[in-house]
Each structure stands twice: as structure tokens, then as C-alpha cells.
Image 1 (tube, rainbow, N blue to C red):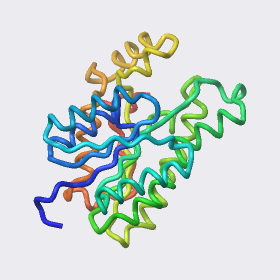
Image 2 (image 1 turned 180 degrees about the vertical axis):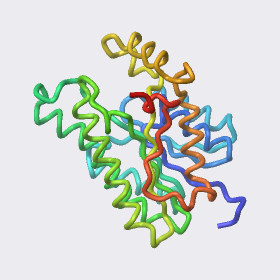
Image 3 (image 1 turned 135 degrees about the horizontal axis):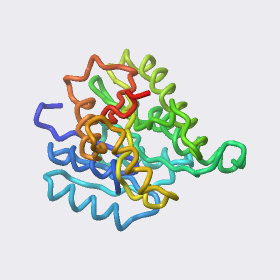
Length: 250
């Protein structure tokens, strides 16, 4: 592959929020971005249009990532269209806000399958399409390490994702493929507006953050873009926290 060849990027959950910002960041570098979505086609179509306006090429791919067959179909479509994959960004996530003692087995399985198992199956299929220099980057959150009320299933799923990052990194290192995770602090997205007291919680997090500002989707996207660059080849199996310093305080 020549230095000038556009990179092939798959961003799961790429229609909104952090996923959208990541898709647009790679578009600015002229990449072909496969924007995965599950339900909100309208948002994904807008992201695809904006990818094109930023200088990239966009393809929309719908898939339910809690279904292994859907993941395999998704990666097969990338292979059919591009023949290879340079960067996989496993961003899509789902969840239910309940304490552990209130969770049903169905809710538990749904969250773990979408947030943790999806990375495993995506990596298994995506690695086949990658050569040395390939990148797998997942998105996590502070709930993987800290106890957040009502966040049991999501927090555990993110902890599993972070551990899986380390195992995959070791297994894929010989191929020159790096696997890392970005643990994002609170980002003002639509999810917070759907949560009870979400606006108040964001205000409290903003006040507690040393710099007095929330992390933006664009800031997260910049870190993901760096991890996908040649400069990050020696970063392997790491979880990079991007939260403006929020987690530093006792």
C-alpha cells in the first residue's frame, strides 16, 4: 500500500456522538469510512454526508452487534468493498441503567454481548483483513474501574472489554497489529439527556474536573486518530484515560 492510499476505517456506532466525531476525524485525512449503525439511519446518513464534505468517502453499514452473524456480515461487506481493513474502531455500545440486584439475565446478556463480546468477534474477523500497521481501538468509560449508581452491567462490560484489549494485543502483536482502548470521561451526548438528573450530573462532573470543562467528542476522536497513526506503533494493549483529569481526584 502506498503512503498516499486512503485508509480503510470501520467505526461501529459511527452515526452519533463520539463515533460520529471519530468518523469525521478520519475523513479529514481522506479515509474511506465505513459508518456502522443499528437503529438511527437518519443520523448515520448525516454523518456519511459530512464525511464526504470533510474529504473522505463514506459507506453506511447497518448491523446489530449483539448478533455474531451480523458482525460477520458487516466485516464481510467491508472486505467485499475494500479488500482490506486498516483501522477498526469498536465504539458502539448499549446499556440499561439498573443496579446489579435489579438486572435480569436478559439485560445482562444484552449489554455484555453488545459492549464486550462484539469486540472479540469484530477483532477475529477484522484481523484477517489487516496487515502490519493495522489498528484495533475500542472505547471504554470510567465505570469500568469505578462504581457508578445504576451502571453495573455497562461497567462490567467495559471492564471485560479492557481486559480483552490486553489479551488481543498480545495475540496480534506478532502481526504488527496494535490493540488499545480509550477510556472516555463524561461527554455531553444525547445519552445524558435521557438519564434522570443527567443534566445535573454533567454539571457536577464539569465542576469537579480540574480544568472546569467536559471532554468533547472531538478530543476523544483526536486520541483515537493518534492511536491509529504510525507514531503509536509502540503503544500496545493499553487503556488511555481521556477525562480532563477528573479521575485524578479522590
